[in-house]
Length: 400
Image (cartoon, rainbow, N blue to C red; front, side, top):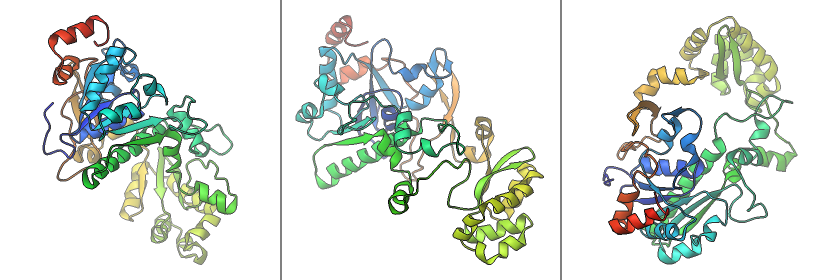
């Protein structure tokens, strides 16, 4: 994989360990902007994500998104020979991404103290359930548990009902994005300030907690425990989902001037001009009345009609998109957010485009997701191993 000088991270070498979502999502993001990502997988099985959800010819279509722009090297990290190969790769890397349980790499002789001796400039991203320190350090943690401990699950769903999940692995992805930020910060410090390498320690629950807005300060200042509120946005009004004749729309009428325009559209000029409704605090006090007024208006209209009228009045509103809606939406297409990829097995599949959009060094898909071990020989040859050495390692089962 030749570095592309028109990418922001051209020349950056990343070794990705771990599996499933959090660590690999960070590798995916760096790879989309030019980093060369070598993904180490276990021989025989590989990353379990290869087999998650809907499969095409035995491989998850999710894999085609998560692992594009990566090279797959099948190495048994439990074998001494595999660990030595990993050291060779990491010695030449800028970044190592891992999301094993704390202590796992140390048991393989691949902990931070071991690796910084062979690569003082290494930036090591460690994503785990509870972080590398603290009393919960050794507990197993998945994204769903991080969402619960971070405070998110308590707020999802309807009041008094069982907490529901967002529907995607948001805890893992938030951790990955925080990890990506950490990697870029550490690289900047190394390049601009001449600093050494360092460890980025990301805990799943902390990444979730970091986006919980006013949750903690409201408890600290007032003893207020925020509760689930269904589709509403507590403390900000009006903002909710409203039933139409053929489904639901989301309406965010919580700006002062937006609220007045919204009330005019729904035929309630009395509410638009009410003195106590000119600020958010007054609207929150009468939120049930406002929701009823908006809901009565939307109920007799179709989604398209509601969106047309509110759009003309410059009131933020939108339909609840399904995968079909996204796939057919012209705005997604216009912004290159629906990309057609061809898998290594020859199947064409539509996948999400690249975010964020950079004007000068945009991200790109330079290669489709690899099959397990597709790049083992090439990467090891680049690391200096001979054909005979590679054959011997394969005969021992250390690589595949």
